[in-house]
Image 1 (cartoon, rainbow, N blue to C red):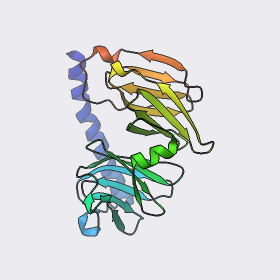
Image 2 (image 1 turned 30 degrees about the horizontal axis):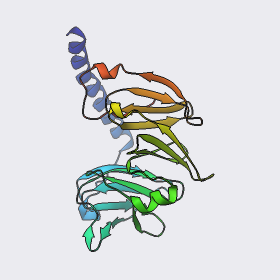
Image 3 (image 1 turned 60 degrees about the vertical axis):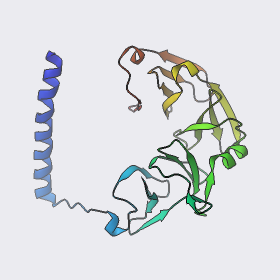
Image 4 (image 1 turned 180 degrees about the horizontal axis):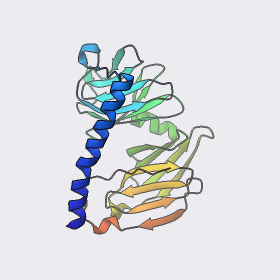
Length: 230
């Protein structure tokens, strides 16, 4: 309880110092904040995810479509199939690949692919046939070289190399509830499962380096998010 009290007491002090510092800096440098919303062309004021692409565009996922901002104006793209929206839910995640495609994950778990050059949408079934993945893709991740990683329904994690056009797979643990989040860097591929189990594997050989179940012993949240400090 003493540690918790210290943490709660410490946070307001930090916020006070932070805002005090911002106010001083703002007075010296006249910091200007601009507001961008539906009046400027944004498809919805309820933005569920933000992604900066390789070309410098800002991409916003909303419940009203995928919106691109080039620094001057917004342009919205919607995936429609036979005149109806592909998914009615919010766009929850955006992942870009080195071939110029955005993988769009919706609140419902559905996935579509947007070509940033042709502005065409594709279903995941069309693309996974090209990649040689037979089972259903349930989660999409990205490594630090813009290569794609897929968690699939056959309890495998797939990595597709767009340069060599090679697909490699790694078995995951179905008893841990599937891959919840994944982060890659030069030291390894960090995987956390919905159960809380953390695993580190070699990104080149896909060999296991570490497996730890410490978080599994704690009251589990609905979802984990990984951040690997440099």
